[in-house]
Amino acid sequence: MQKILVEGGARLSGEVRISGAKNAVLPILCATLLADAPVRITNVPRLHDVLTTARLLAGLGAAVVHAGDVMTVDPRSVNSHVAPYELVKTMRASVLVLGPLLAKFGDAEVSLPGGCAIGSRPVDLHIKGLQALGAEIVVEHGFIKARSHGRLQGARHVFELVSVGATENVMMAATLAEGTTVLENAAMEPEIVDLAECLNAMGAKITGAGSPRIVIEGVDALHGCEHAVVADRIEAGTFLVAAVMTGGSVTLTHARPDTMDAVLDKLREAGAGIHSEGDRIHLDMHGKRPRAVNLTTAPHPAFPTDMQAQFMALNCMADGVGVINETIFENRFMHVNELLRLGADIRVDGHTAVVRGVASLSGAPVMATDLRASASLILAGLVADGETTIDRIYHLDRGYENIEAKLSGLGARIRRVG
Ligand SMILES: CC(=O)N[C@H]1[C@@H](OP(=O)(O)OP(=O)(O)OC[C@H]2O[C@@H](n3ccc(=O)[nH]c3=O)[C@H](O)[C@@H]2O)O[C@H](CO)[C@@H](O)[C@@H]1O
Ligand SMILES: C=C(OP(=O)(O)O)C(=O)O
Image (cartoon, rainbow, N blue to C red):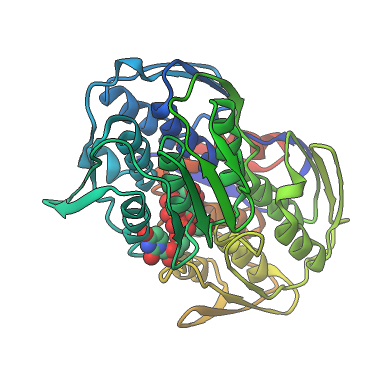
């Protein structure tokens, strides 16, 4: 099995290009099912989850062509409406074919995704939202089986909880519904805005994406389009944390600083000088040790749960004590035990972790448990004394494009073996 080896101690400097966002490209690829013509997606990151989605779409009968960072999906040959367990279990975002299949073909069978390392992750909010549009849904034998008699019907629906995936699934389904749908308490993530922009380019009539109230006026059909995926704010944040921890100075290109306010504010609080211009973000730490920061994860525009593990790594070596509250997922402290193996001082009480910065971490073999946990272990390895070996890196390949090559380009001593 492949592993990543990190030799700590190098100060990062230089320029790195940010890829398209995993959490935007996955729903967008699912949305292509709604069209009546080929959809061309650019700035597609080379990620395992993208390949899984391509396999899922091809399994439904779509013609998928992938060349470099462009993926073209022609949904006209779709002849199956079943998303099998084998694919859904490896990637929860597969559940995002449910809304498009149902809206376009009137039926869909999607395996229940099940939980994952970070929590139980139910899909009840997706189901309730689609039922509000008139879908008949039963869950049996491990599948969500959805049907609509005629077109879905536009409706007003209030989400009980803010959910990114449920907002995306119901927004996609509503594009082809009869009449107007109003979604209240919708998630406001930049990836939802990007999905809405792509759907509008396909001929949908969506307003309000990025606010808690999204209005979708249903249309009879959607056409093809070309769309460039928004920059990955989590990948960008991860590189910035790496620069802060190593006392370095880096410039991100092809980024979207306007989607990263909460993270940039926390990095400034940690002592970083940050200057953004257009799609570039320059961060300089001037060789200083960062200060510990307190943070609470919450839906956008608050601090993202997908950056919590990386900031935990930062607090582990920072000056002072940082308190981290995780409010989105019930089990998203899996990285704590591995960080402890590197000499961190962390105490967890329920959803709160109290992290006391130590003067130095020491390299050790550790195991990745989920995507962002993997990133946090690389970050800790960058400043640990000696060598850190990270096992189970398939998690990392789900969501980071070529992370070791990008970090090496900034001067990190990191390589993949096996
Ligand atoms: C592919 C993708 O975009 N993944 C992101 C998406 O995941 P995902 O869309 O799965 O996350 P949600 O926003 O839906 O989850 C938020 C919370 O709502 C709960 N919930 C969700 C749906 C539901 O039907 N019932 C329910 O109770 C979840 O268990 C969780 O506690 O948003 C998360 C929160 O920003 C990010 O961490 C993930 O990286
Ligand atoms: C939790 C994440 O992704 P997913 O929802 O795809 O598991 C993530 O990107 O950190």
